[in-house]
Image (cartoon, rainbow, N blue to C red; front, side):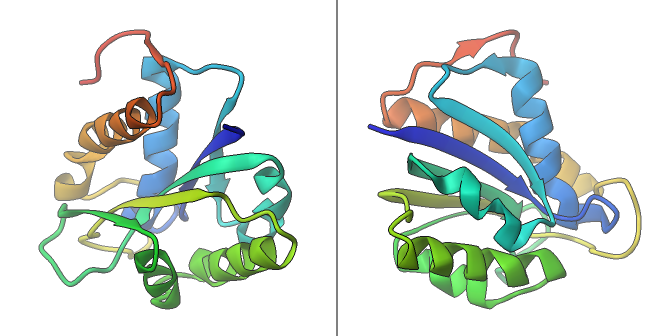
Length: 163
């Protein structure tokens, strides 16, 4: 198994759009990861993230995902679902993500496993705070990511329990 990248994306200036960034920040507070795991605040970098995929076999993306459900609803996407999610382009950072993953395929950098953990946003209006339903799901998303890693046989040391 190669490296694992946990990538939180989104714009923290647009309320719930920044949930991925909030989740990776929380992950770094509650757990220690082996050297083979990188936790990254990808913000709105899009295509500029391509070089982080070098040597990565497992990729987890955490993001706000427009799935037409009630705010705070979680979604786990993998395989063919990932390009469908990326095609929605609900915010500017997602324009760069499809390009990054397409370029990764062209350069033979596409990870063996790609999973998107997302949450339905309540709002993506200008604001620094997450909405209540999305904020309530941050620790749940942290747990889902840690469970994903455990399922891949990646050991994680909890610093303290979430919450």
